[in-house]
Amino acid sequence: MATTVQMTPLMVKVEEELGEPLGDYLRQRYSVDRVSMRALAKELGVARQSLYGWILAYGILRRVWREP
Image (cartoon, rainbow, N blue to C red):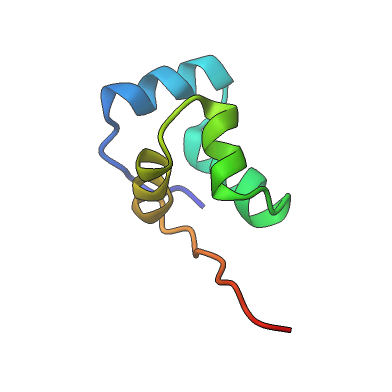
């Protein structure tokens, strides 16, 4: 699923370091692997606020906390 996103210089840098499309990586790590935003931001070396914006830009649905 290709989504056209206006890439910031930081997004370009992270994508180059990953060696794969950033959107695909975020979908895999966040949606499939269920890595937390905090852990994923740390893994990528970016602020959580930046990661949150990227998640929104790529149209990735955010998980919500629910009580048991």
